[in-house]
Image (tube, rainbow, N blue to C red; front, side, top):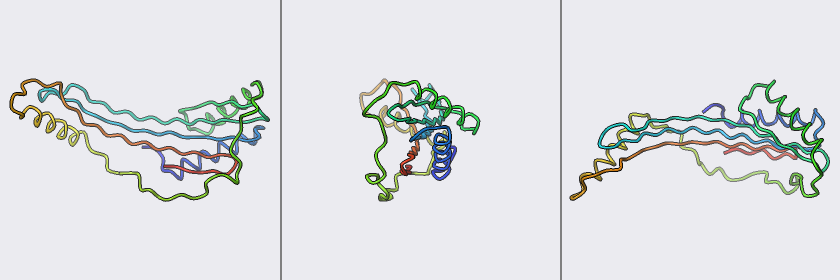
Length: 172
């Protein structure tokens, strides 16, 4: 996938600073990145092979008791600046919401355990193929089984980073 967690958080910090400089009283921003790949086989023949990668940044701005949110898949500074401009313009026109706002700094988590959630291993298409073929082979080896709906193997990884103008920064 594209960026490491530190770079994701740096990008979010830039967006939050931009939101403040454009007139937002507060803001939060989130990045979602995902990568997936998979293979499907039926009777030993490839039926489907796919891979997808996505990255999206969302920014929500608050002006008084008004809020608006926009998202972008373009992480260039000009595109992110434009996204913030749109969010600020939309927030200025939004109806007031007495319940909108960010959690105050004093109730935000400042530290949490490292749960070691990420497996950096990315199986190759060949490895996924071996796994799918082995699964189908095992099913077809069962006495009396003569048909197969196929077998598949897949891989996925995602990363999420969140930052707020109240000081929260976290990623996993």
